[in-house]
Image 1 (cartoon, rainbow, N blue to C red):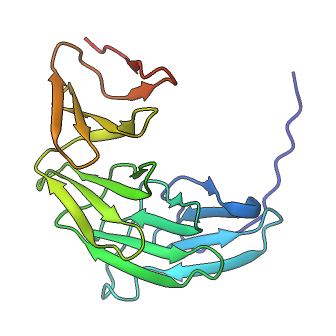
Image 2: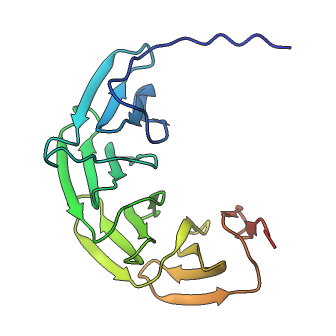
Length: 199
């Protein structure tokens, strides 16, 4: 049996809702019920963004993890239908883009730096978002879940109604396979697609 030392390095004001990610220079970024928080590994807070002040008492809850781009942007989706982009160093809000649906799915980023967002509850769409200004590059009417990309960055794969769907980086349908029933996908370096058959 190995002893594991657990240290409490940060006390949260609200319940932690999303996943924890590591940013540049070992910054730790996570979401609570109302806040997006960035701390150093010693627990010292670098910044905290209040996501509820504009919602008149409602919550901007985050279920998924943020993503950090190579140019130090922190991007996260919320229950309040917005995709938010913050500066990683100072936590300054750079832009927010309103979509027509709660954002519950994990975000993806392509090799070209485009943010891929999927909404799946009522308004089922896949959006390609410009990471610099939050503008929508394209959108398609597909409710794809758990989107991953090919090793060459030219294709995106997702699951819709148990089918595996492949689209290109402009949102065009390449193929669809409904013979495999899976919820989660992985792609290896050779481009092979893996899933867990649940039936």
